[in-house]
Image (cartoon, rainbow, N blue to C red; front, side, top):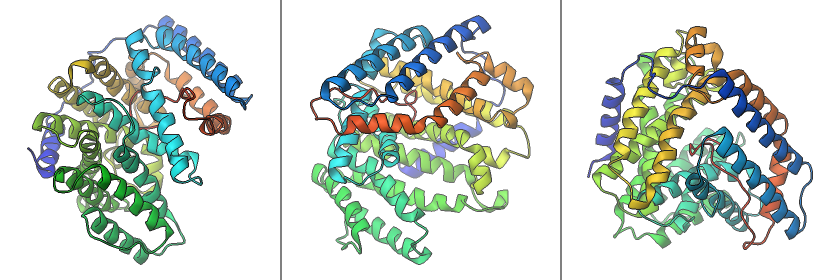
Length: 425
């Protein structure tokens, strides 16, 4: 079994040996094909907006709303996204859609005050962990450990982002939290810590520290990587002053590696390698999507570091080639029943990067964007308009989701889906 340090160096070597030329091996879309898919996506968004404008109150109303949204998604998936029935079964029928609702309802039982944004952040991780359950031959469900790990970081992030807490208090919390993850018996200092400690206890109740030491080693690994990644938040830092590559890769790789151990308890070397590399790829996608905000906030990533000094063409090309090589390792892992999930992961690993690049168009050369757009099922101008449209109506969608959170547990799940299986809602 490889250590986290060995997995990190493996990821760094894979990145550095990845090409920076344009990746042109995928399928291209004609303008007519893009226009037809845009029409389907537009119809779907209109349907969801109409449903969000009339919040369902009774059980029968919620069921009807769910059926109409699900039917609209099926049409979009088949006509606009090229998905088949086997993909939809995994996404809708007790699959990822149910995972989102299950976690959300459990979150409200755990803490009635938890906000929707925190729930959605937790859903992102739960979708990843539950996808790994399928890859590793386990049934897909929100286990106590997956719930606890998914909720830990909204709570710890909120704690560390609270301007009312001093820097020394935050440093003290990080030390105590690390000790608690290591198994030390540390009394919580306040109500927030008490909630976080309860989440750690849920993991301990499912996994024994003596029988499953790698579960808790992986939790310490992501905690340490998160703590080290604070060095990336240095406005005006010199390139040579911080190892952006390793800090970013460690943060992404250890995060999803922990998902794998929480999903299965143990993994072999091939499984751990792919899952760590997939975490790095997901981090690259997140960093590309956030490149403008990170640049404004002084957060160093491979993309924000390059932005403003040079076009992002070359570093994005390298991310595509890196992702293709990571997907090559996917064939070495997975149960007999995971072929459909593997196909969705491969497709989404490229399409997500394309969509993220479309959001930061001003950071690329126009020639590059025009070439990349041909590999997108939607034109970039259309995608950007739809993002703005969603942002204006986000409150409606949140209220619609809230209406389903108050439902009974035996009611069908709200069709809340991951963003192409990538952990960015």
